[in-house]
Length: 101
Image (cartoon, rainbow, N blue to C red; front, side):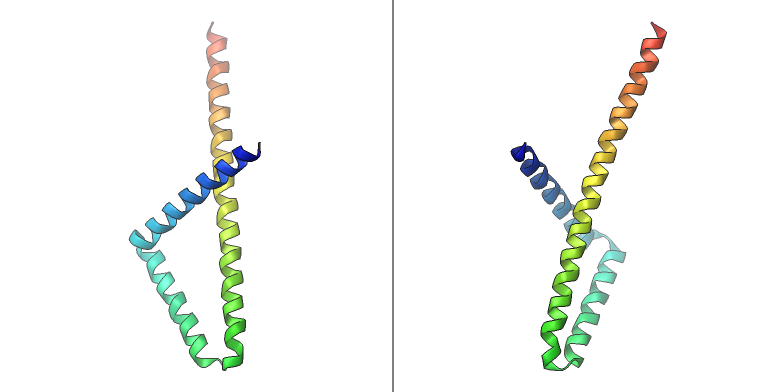
């Protein structure tokens, strides 16, 4: 069971990385917001006293980790929902077919 979980994790990680790369390369609104966030971060870093730089980096690190966890959970839930929908549709068609015979 653990190898199935590991395989699923690898597949979801690869897919999430692919989607993220595609967004960064082709989605104009994503690129714009990403640049704005980078600009805000650099402005904060420049204007904060040196003793707050570590705190700013910790904040960024924790926000990135939080975002990563949420993306992972959302993607996995989407896969589960898709599998459930396929299962539901398959059984609905099977039930409809069995009524005809």
